[in-house]
Length: 230
Image (cartoon, rainbow, N blue to C red; front, side, top):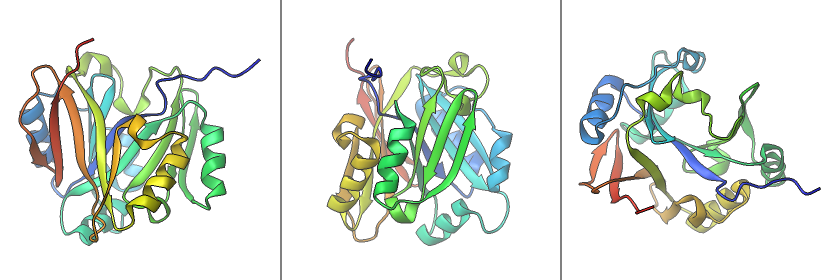
């Protein structure tokens, strides 16, 4: 019998920003997007970080900030000269197949976790370019451990619909990301554009009823789109 494939996957489930001042960026995001209370995950202390994770519908927006020297996020902040996009986290239907595709390209994994309710790997940003790419399979598919306990009750009526990555070699990088995900990037709302400065994750698109004005927070442009009628 053929394995069931969820036609809604892969999808961009979470976008992550790195910031020097976590509280300042969190405050701006809450003010601009009318977000609920964020979840502070003690587990990110393992990476030398503290964080805040917001639920937007069943998608998520995270801000991380270094709390010790020589962290991956801290090094990125130094290279970029300030707050910036950090990671894109994609939900995939078949993580084993995705990992095989990644290995076939010679892309390294920098982190993996396997728990009762989630399996996940992070791909090396030097190989993927533009951002750390996370591939995640939650169980059940509607779950999201990283949102914290009770995230549906804290969720704001919005949804992350896409992101823009800017790199020096957009065609090569776009092909690499599409291969890792096993789907055209248009399907997951990701655009890869040319930028000799290799700035990575520069834009997150969010839909909400009534739309709204775009704004910048944490070095990332947030483009507010009109929510599509169901």
